[in-house]
Image (cartoon, rainbow, N blue to C red; front, side, top):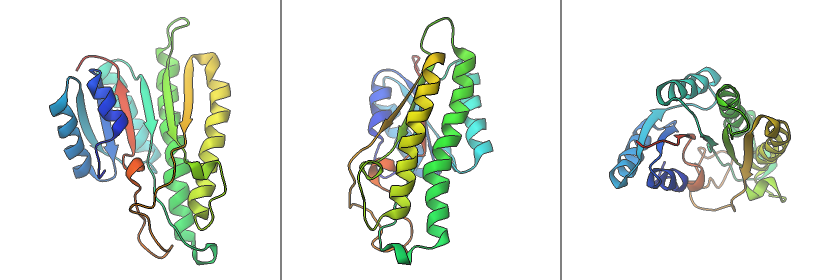
Length: 209
C-alpha cells in the first residue's frame, strides 16, 4: 500500500467508516492513520491475505457485526508479472490465480452473504466493486498470468451482476489502464504490486465515524 487508496480517501471524506485490509499490515496502518487524520470519517487497518477464505469471511462478518451494516466491498488486491510466456512457472500462475481470482471470489462471497441478510424491502443491499484491468479487456502480451486472471475477474463480475440484481446487490467491475510503475520485468523477478492495486480490500460501512 504505497499510496493512500483513492476510493478509501473519498469514502472517508464523506464521513464513512472504512477498513483497509492489506497483506502488509504496517502499510495499511499508515494509510489508515493518514486518512483518519483528514476526516471526517475514519479508516482502520487489518492485515489480510485475500487467498485465505476463512480470514476474509471473518473480517467481513466482524465489520458487519460491529457496525450493523456493510455498504460496500472493494476487492482490489493484485500482483503483476511481466515477461515471456515460456518463462512463467507454476508459482507465477498459482500466485496470480490466488490473488486476482480467488481473492475476488472470497471477498465477493463473504460480502454477498452479509448483504443478502441485511436487505430490507426493495432498498439497496450493498455494492461489491471488483478491480479488473484494461488487460482484462484487450490483449496484453508478456503478461499472460495477469491478463488471464483479470479476464476472469471481468467475466465473474458480469455473471454475478446478472444474478445479484434481483437481491438488490449491485456488482461492478472497474478496469483501470495498465502502468509500468513497480512492475516486474521478468517472471523470475519477485511479484510487483501495482500502485492502483495496493490494498487487498476496502470494506465500508456508510455511517458517521
